[in-house]
Image (tube, rainbow, N blue to C red):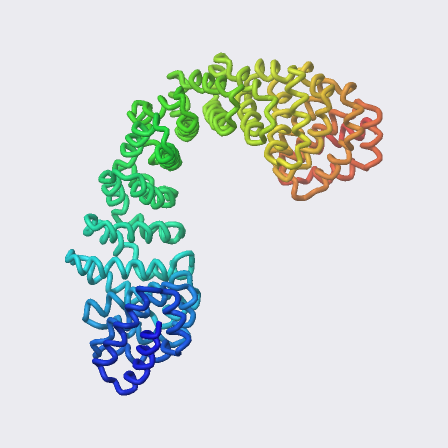
Length: 607
């Protein structure tokens, strides 16, 4: 350290005299000290005020310049030195050096700027202010075709500098995107794929930039999909594959890029990874299996990419994914069920899959998880069944296959995501299926559980679906026995509350169900109708100008239906319904105005 102190003193004197030889030897001493004890030497250099002298030594003409830039790069490896480097005014002269034609000067300058920017707000702001990123981006563009090893080293440093400059900073990343950095980096990946260091730097850059939504359009206009798939095919090491996966995942969120990746052959690569790792017990095998099967499911979220892989139900990819469902591996079971749910996004696919026996595979999978209880697999398999049950022609086939019975086995689940999908699946199954609605609607345990979930205020989705299923059981069965079961189970008050929902479709479903209850068993429902202030709710719905025509129409139908009950009739009279209804005779909707006339006649006749 004494040698260092001497060198620093000499440097102070020499820099004033601009004696190149003595400056040079002092700089060598500094570099040696930094190599021996990085932190201590950095502290000493700062304490002796040498930083403020370095700008003078950063002149394009001086032969010492690369060494000075190298020293700054080494100093800035320490977090505590980055701020002082900015304060010492090192950024502007470093940026000026970027115009140099000397490769060594450019290399060390790129390193210095990159290290100062690393995790440093001050460093990035100073480089931004001096316009450094633009110059570096232009250098990368002009040097991109040159495959000389020294040039590739410089490109790696420049790419690293831009990454340190923009990492975790949305506005600086957006700035790089607007400079057109993405197409340049994609070209680099293609031209320099043999260079491991440069390739990795490009991948890190893509990983950062791909998180930004505005980058996707630029990526989609390049051949990034082909380049990444080509690179992936060459990899044998787990870490390298993981790096590519980290870029693929955010890019594959874009539907255009999904299709490009499918066309570039990514799916075949993923299936190969699955085949290689499915029986592996190493952590990296398990990680690769999860990443590749998850990515596969993500690719199926795009309509075009999904349809391309479905190939009318004859596609080899579709068949391979089907084989995952009976697998012993939970991750593959999950991915297989999610993939089926994604394939089941249009009626044609759903009908084909039900006709080719997929329902049985999903039921067998669910049966395996009643006791094993893997919640994610349960949720995924129920999602697939719910989607498959949407086309009308599938409902009776799925009911005959015993879907409702298997789904009911999960009625005791305490997991809201499973409860939500279970409810949705049953609701889809009974739509237009009177017999099934009757059978389920008279199942006391099911109705009891629905009423319980109608109060699940912490889980709005479960609460909403429970109400909708309760209403659907009545609407599709039109059965007095179902109505009786719902009344006895305490479901009426929930349907009255549902009629006040902010969602018109739910309001309407509730009103139709309540109308059926009133028509089929008014005597049994009377007490609940009074207790839940049904008449008051209907009065508000008719008064509310925002109520849709269907809501007004069904509210009036319900008013007429409850007039046979003395206590409800009294409530109707006390709220002066005639005034509200008579105004609705002038409603622009003909169905509403006609029903208003009929309702007014009914109210007048019974007043």
